[in-house]
Amino acid sequence: MLAAATCGVPIIGRRLMGQVGSDTRPETAGPATGRTRLMKAKVFEVTLHPLPSGKSPASALEEQLNYFLGQRPDVQVVSTHINTIVAPAEPNAMPSSEEASIIIFCTLFYTE
Image (cartoon, rainbow, N blue to C red; front, side, top):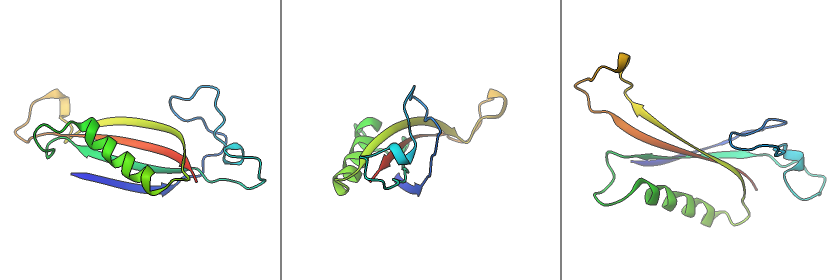
């Protein structure tokens, strides 16, 4: 299963994970035009279980990112963040009879 979601996220004066000493305020995110630029976030999702045999999660994620960026030539990437979850979470690390799904999320922070 491959899916993506988008949301507009105004981030003023906050630092993003993985950025040290970088200014992420929208008013300084682009050229000095006097216009405030809104930082947005797009979340890409790759679920490992249904991937076709021989297809890596990295190539599935790369296809999603390249498609998104190809449709928006004016996007400026500010930062990315990747996270992995296992669902359902196993309480107290006890094995369960349910099959767990491993899901990789990649969040792309950008301005247009």
